[in-house]
Length: 96
Image 1 (cartoon, rainbow, N blue to C red):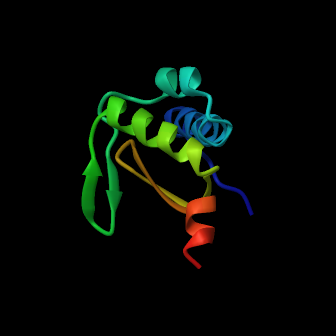
Image 2 (cartoon, one colour; image 1 turned 120 degrees about the vertical axis):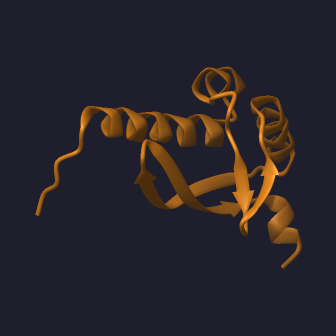
């Protein structure tokens, strides 16, 4: 089967793929270019943070614990993308 994806959705998907690559590589310069100032991190329906600076700080802290994230699902609605992801890190492994 196939589906048509409009140009703005294709561009959004490309940016998201670049984001995950930069995030897992801890490429802070690239993340700074990719991430919008309006980024929001929501966990279990609670807004955890809502700024680019706070997100970059979070990624930098994750570097200490060798964290990595994998995208499990992606939904697009009205030009906004919502990703569900899986996170793994040395900190999580120590807790199990």
